[in-house]
Length: 258
Image (cartoon, rainbow, N blue to C red; front, side, top):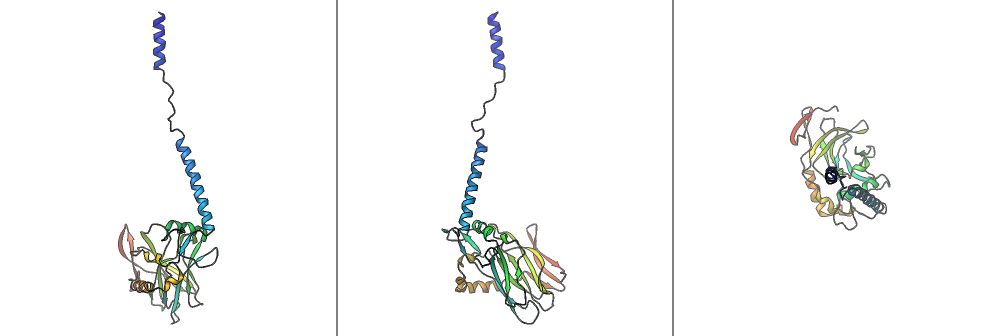
């Protein structure tokens, strides 16, 4: 009888669900994420110190400029691109990298610009015409990727301009081209259209200093830029331009309220 009772007790004990052991990796994910965050914070502080101490170098980059009669007075003006730090008020290089870098780095350019807070301005040779400041916020620009005299599209005697702003990211792809005109004493943006820039302007990294703008190869670049087909064309009372829909290039007609 005792043997039977003992066997039943033993069998019951074996069938009772044993508590599961915690896996050996329990808590590892949490610990690793905390460690990762600490490392990221440490790197962020290190980068911030490097930026504030100027422990990076810059590449000047190309400065676009165009000629045209933008106010309709019969005389040509020159619009010249300037990239200015809102922190110092001084003109700055477009691209940045670590001190050891031989070419600019898009990540460091964006990182440094959170400190430099640049703005892109088109200075006019005619002091009566105000500067044109690009529409993007200051932390999101490294100047112009393209600037073009679009001609007199509405027949009022003034030239319009088309431009593509470089937002400084590591991805290129489809960008935005804008059409602007000067009327009633101020610059007005008329159209924003998508475009895919075929040229990534990799030659920009060769222009490390303002003096490099006087080098021979820059003259060849400027000739090529002048031969670039216009983004916008006049067709009767409308403006024709190329845009993207579902990654397909299409020609669009648009009547502008001038």
